[in-house]
Image (cartoon, rainbow, N blue to C red):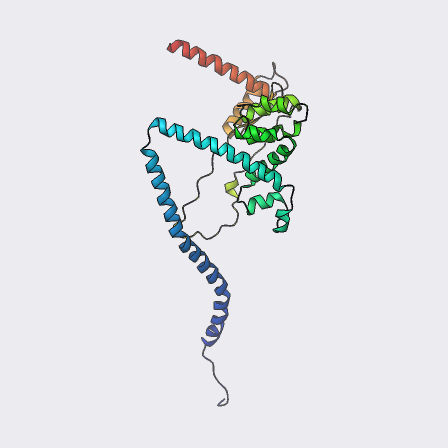
Amino acid sequence: MDGLVRTRPDAAVHSRAPRRLRRLRPLARATNDRLSAFAEAAPKRVLQADMKNEMLASLGRLSDVDLVRSLKTLVAREREATADVIAHLAELDTRDVHLREGFGSLYLYSREALGLSEWESYNRIEVARTARRFPVILDMLADGTVHLTAVRLLAPHLKPDNHRALLESARGKTKLQIQEIVARLAPKPDVPASIRRVTPASLSPGPREMPLPDTPAPAPPSPVHATVAPLSPDRYKLQVTIGSETLEKLRCAQDMLGHSLPSGDQASVLDRALTTLLVDLARKAREQA
């Protein structure tokens, strides 16, 4: 017994402590790196905020006439700059610059090297490739005759013998109006009515990162609006999210219209409901007049 060395009960705990510390070091370094980056960027953010505040303050001293004149000038410059960006992308698409810089596609180059969003990259590249076929698009973008969305939607239907007329027909049109032009050019069949349960994305959140100090809370999700897509002349696809009570009303209306509308077609039920609503609103308006 005299030759044995007794170990205190807490010795094993202390021997494992260095191993735990080694495992924590990468996390600590990553946290320190993020905090350092945040601290380095803080003065820049403060300077940018000061510049924006000064800009807003200077605009606040403009008269209405001067403010509108300045805004129109900036919008015109933005259109010209957009046309220039499209022209540059069209030329860049003919070269292998993005490949030499390590990007597998012009899309990835636009996302990572140019800092454009996914939608900005896709939209501009599609328009740039169309502008190479029909250079008049660049002039129309610069003077505001058409916008990027109009060109992208019309691109599959533009041909040497119709591109000028089609682009001119898009002058000043909204996205929905452009989609109606496309629906006339390439009509689609009616889509079958369908009802399905949807699950809010917030119920299944992905992994979350540790927030940095003073990081503002994320904004709440925007409400989902109904979408309308033209299919063919005078035919549209409507997609809308409704609650359980609205769904129950729809089903009750289908049951009550069973004799006059055996098919229970939701589009017909909606049309009848809106017609009844409009008649009722018109009656109330006359009574209040």
